[in-house]
Image (cartoon, rainbow, N blue to C red; front, side, top):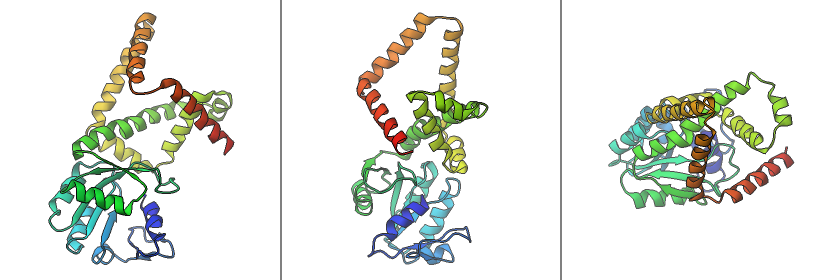
Length: 276
């Protein structure tokens, strides 16, 4: 994501872009300047964007805040906010903090039609306006607290990654190409999702699953529901299985047009196959 944002800001002709990376062999785009250390990169910057692994984000944010000029903007994009939020809060009298989470990956072709989550640190309106100004075209959604953000991410990211990791381990023991050849739309889309997840940085996947304190609870609930469902199937209690399925279906029908979702799925999968 650091490379994505570097390209994004470098495309703005009026913007001078400085970059720093601990990878000594990394080369930035020709229109960006590579700095020798953090201090030289951030000391005179109007906006600093921290794009680093989840485990090192809090310390890097603090290093940047200490070196930045007063009144500059310090933004961070980590997927877990419990610790990064507190560091931004600590230095919010010196810098303008932005606790954001881009809900898209480095494969996004542009900022248009993307979504960015914002957790206000000091002033909701000021921070929201700031994100909108340099991420024009993206939908900004404000979440009330870092705790709420992390609880939702445990479901949206942690549980999704966990479920697909389990499925991927099972499928890795099979002839995956043959399964894809004989599969229908549902499995094809599931396989596509799994491949997308596996394309992510393994360290990011591990951090999202293991570092979010709410993810463990989500995984436990998932395994409990799976065990209950297994017992129902093993006991051939089909009427109970049907009742549970209808209950879940009715809940989803309150929020979604399931038939339209079904058609959208086919449209998406057809477009994917046409571009292969």
